[in-house]
Image 1: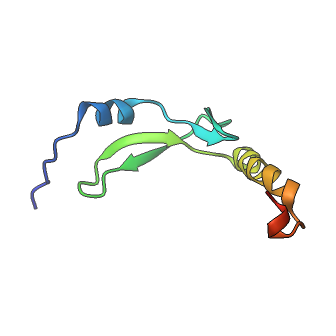
Image 2 (image 1 turned 90 degrees about the vertical axis):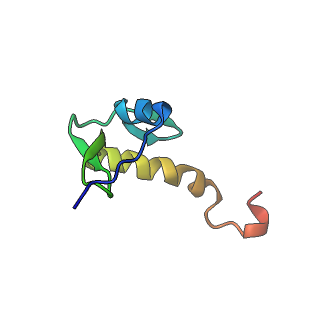
Length: 82
């Protein structure tokens, strides 16, 4: 089987080459863990990038960040939430 050849825009390659972290509470930042997760091109199986591997504390922070705005309106009628 031959691998497909697809040209990658320079802007896309620059994005893929960056160290990606987490996006929590409206801003990007590093994970508490130094671990990374590989990102693979599904067409070729080739590793093309990596991203931060969130640990339990990172997930807790993300959940709390998402919950904060909801907790302000929880229990209110939909018409009273605006």
